Image: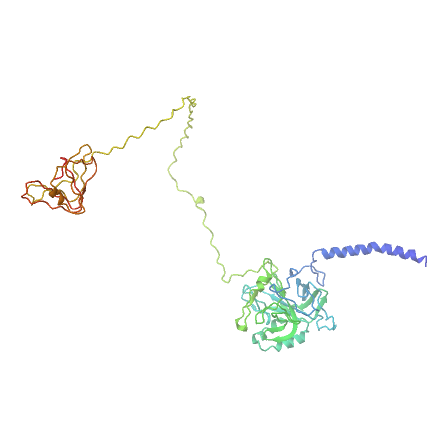
Length: 473
């Protein structure tokens, strides 16, 4: 025993570097980029190879996993889809984020194809041309294809065997249009599970010729043994998740039961799947439109229906045409020499005495202009026998430098003035030197014409104009 113990230790020490190298190689291989697929004949390269983001297994962005705790998160999350050929067969590889469930953990039961809960639809647009193939997806998917593209073949991958699945499809007689498409639905007869990969081999005679112009699309769904007008072996979407259905939808028709799918670069999966409308009637629903992915282009663009006419060759530019002969050009005179102007030097500023402050002159007294001699002239009454009547209205300016005294009148004459007027003053009285004299409010009566004393007629209202002579007659 003593002799064998050192030898065992030496062997263990020798194996330790080898084990470390193997671990380092496995770690480096896990972190490196995915290797290109290799077929059965050790040939590398693929007809189609597309990766998908991790963690987008939410359908339109708000779907929930079933409440069955045996279904782990990531079971319906696509990571990579590859298509390559091996001689007379096409090989389709589907990789998910979580290991594929080969059996139920509690019952240890499995299905005929070796898995229990996953389901995939692989649509193939063989010719890559618009307005060909089937525009709608399989029943129960509630999806259409965009850009007027359609599929010619679809591979329906279910846990059921080829014969059992075919019998169930033929029994779906509620959709007669689907019965005409069963011949284009390919059911694989053998599926191989490799941890997180599913390898499907299909004979080329069942699919046709795949070219670089062919398009592909893969849908990740949940499997259920139900066939109804709105379901074809797939889980449904409810308002709230159940142990056998997804949650986050509406309890009506039209919710696409797709948890994940392939999307071309630059397009959002959530926005694409949200473009649907769920209604209580199946005839009123609006389906979301999903694209195909083509290996020879990032995004499939619609091919124009009308052939493009060839464009005529453009005419040569006018500069290339020969110009007609014209008159001889005149010699161009040289430009005149620039005139340089020399400005005289500025004169020195002269020193001046400070300006004296200007004293403001006193304002002269305001003198009013001399008023006209007569503003209102006295008119003559045609019934008057020599005595003058004064105007009935107007103003009479008073002479500023002259003053007049009225002659004394008799008390009887002065007393004849009407009430409201100022009686004439008896005796010599001085008038104001300037201004206007207002007329009495009413007309005064005059003495009979037989009276020898002179009488004066005054206007009823206004001012009595004074004559240059000085007296108001």
